[in-house]
Image (cartoon, rainbow, N blue to C red; front, side, top):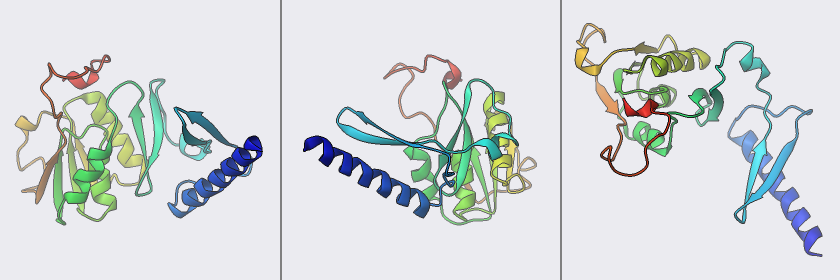
Length: 195
């Protein structure tokens, strides 16, 4: 009895998740793919196996990178062991007022800039990132999402910028810095975020 009830519940959950997947306009699951459901710490977590092949044909990932689908019809490249986006990027982009040009200091993978562009908050973003590896990921994320014409990636220290780098003044500057002193909390063992 419990087993059949649980099976019906799981089937209903999978159907609801598939419907939400379609409503959110996430990449379509092909007929050959499976949906897996696992139970972790008394919570159901659904995992959709998505066909990444069309994207993978156009983008080269290193062994320590992955592709993630996020809101606003964006797909981003992220480091598996380093800097990844979080809820704060969504919140930051939600609070940005409409303008023409914006700058993102410490852009990381460029997710906040990409969200500002896809939400129509800015017509052009200048994503400034000091770490060359993340500036490269940021540039590739703009290409991956067909936003290279609306996002300029600058691999430099923000202290070296001038109005020449941004074709004049910008309307808005955003930044998503670490919130705690470096000697508090847990440190990233990869060392990538310690720059």
